[in-house]
Every structure is written in structure tokens, then in C-alpha cells.
Length: 424
Image 1 (spheres, rainbow, N blue to C red):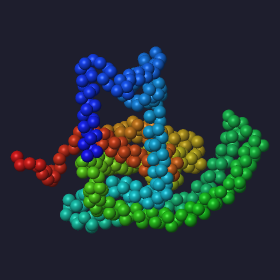
Image 2: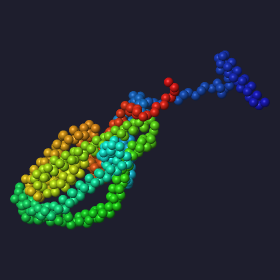
Image 3: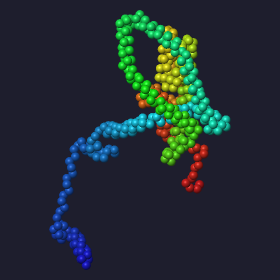
Image 4: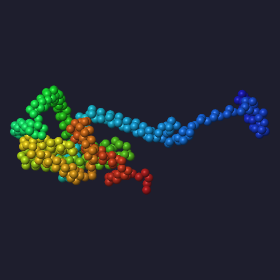
């Protein structure tokens, strides 16, 4: 009953208010209802600068609009680059912690890219896959061990002769320092020699500790070698299945793109490794011929050193060629050393201007600055091994990023099964 009375009272007030509005007499309403509404607050004062600063679509308040656009863009770039740098630093720390696994796997990938064509030839000759992989891997190991055996034997046989000629070469250098353009007297020479001996004595402990630490890592080297062999074997035998498994871990819409980028990167890695081997062989052959012509001792070991060092672009062959020049200086004097130096420089020019563009081509074209920076970063992070794998890593990443950034859709594989969403 109380609800009915309240409803009737409300209806009565509504009718009275409507009647008063039609009659135009404000007295028909109650004093509370007839009181005028409070006036709206005045709008806040806006200065001319605020009126002339429109809000940008990327700002959420007037305070953001007051910040210059260039400063807002710079701040946005800064925190994003900072986030990327933190992630990259964390990845480098993780790689540093597990480098004993990462580095052997990287070397195994390089060896797999080098030996994959030989495995393909044996597979086309109807060899079983496991047998073909084993034959290629054992043959490669035999070639490496045989080369190292020849190098070590020749080095051991020539050390006594080179040691005697080294003493003679040191005396010749001392005579040249006295009578040459420097005109150093005996007192200055003795001071320099004493400084060198002092430095050697002071750093003997450091050199010895480094040698001991190197000997302590023999187990790690052995473990890494075994991991390289096993990883190379399985990469050569099951590489395609391993890659398909990794691709299936990606989202469905990204699988074809990742597969296309990965296979293109593998082709780039194979082209790089094979081209580097060919270029290194040509460098070693060219400089080795001059060493043999001028009867420089250790011609074969020096050529092998040049071949191995040439896997580090630009820097490797230059440093190993410098070793050959020093041996020629000690053994045959400055004239022969200058001739060997000219041969090293000539071979380097032939490599840089003819062999690299002709053999590698556009597939693995990398700017020399990127090569030098990559080698320096590799040396800092992982020593000689880092310098060895830095450039192929840059080449692979260059190809992968280009393929992933391309807007073209990879072609449908011939064995792909396409299921239509509705019947045609």
C-alpha cells in the first residue's frame, strides 16, 4: 500500500509540473523546484600558446603536445633501442656461458656446408645415407690428419737449420741498425735489448699461467672436438629432418616464410664456405710458389698456414703472409724478404679485386667494413674461433633478414597439400 501511495504522489507531482509549464506560471511548482539552477563554471582560461598547439594523434594529453615532436620521437627511439640492447646483452651472456656448446655447433655447421655436396654425390650414386655421410666424414678427417702430419714432420726437420739462421739474421739486423739510417750505437742497442729481456722476465709468470690454463682446457677442447664430429655427422645425415622439426615449432602463418629464409641462408653458407676454401687454396698456392722458387725453408708449412688463415677474410692471409716474410728475412736477407712481401701483396690484391667478386658473387656480397667489424667483434667475444665464424654468420643473417623482410610470398612447394575451405 505504501508503494501505491508513493506512485500516486509522484504522478500528481508530474501532472502539476506539466500544468505549470504550460501555463507559464512558475508559482505552480515548489520553491525547491522553482529555484534557478546554479550557473555552469566558466571555462578555464587558455593561453594563446595552448590554443595554437593542437594535439597530435600520438599524444594523449596537452603536456605531451607541449614537448617538441623531435624530442618525443628521440625518446621513443631511445627506450626501444635500450630494450633491444638489454636483450642483446642478455643473449651474449647466455652464449658466453654455453660457448663450449655453441662454438662446436657453429663449426659443425661450417663443415656440413662444405661437405654436403660430397654427400649429395654419393647419394646420387645410390649409397645409403648413413654410409655416404660416414665415408665423407672419414675422408675429410684423413685429409686433415695427413696434412697436419706432413706439416709437423717438415717443421721438426727444419727447426735446427732455421734456428742457426735466426741467430745470423739477428746479427744482420743489429749491424743494419748500427750502419743504417737509424745509426744506433751499442749503448742504445743494449738498452733496447735489456728492456726486451726485462719485459719477458716480468711477463714469464703470465705466459706460464696462460699456458697452464690452456693445458687445463684440454678436456674442453677434446669435448668440443667430439661434439663437432657427432654434430657434423648428424647435420649431414639428418639435416633436412632437423630443419623441418624446427620449422614446425613456428606459428603456422610464418612457417613458409621461415623455411624460405632458412633454406636461402643455407645456400648462402654453402656458397661462402666453398668460395672461401677455393680462395684460400689459391692464396696458399700463389705464395707457396714464390717460397719454393726462392728456396725459403718451411715452404709447405707456411703454405698450409696461409691456407688455414685465409678462412679469416682480409686479415688472415695478411698475417700469415707476414710470417712468411719474416722467415724469408731471417733465412735469405732483406732483398728476398721484399720480393716475398711483394708476392703477398700481389696475391692479396688478386684476391680482393678478382677472386672474391668472381667466385662469391652477389650471393654473399658483404661490405668490407662489415667484415672488419664482425671479425673484431668475433675476436673479442670468442678469440680465433669467433673471428672464424663471424663473417659467415654475418652472411647468413644478411640473407635471412632480406628474405624475411621481403614482401613476396614463397612459392607453394610441389608436395604441399592444399585443402579448400569450401567445395568448388
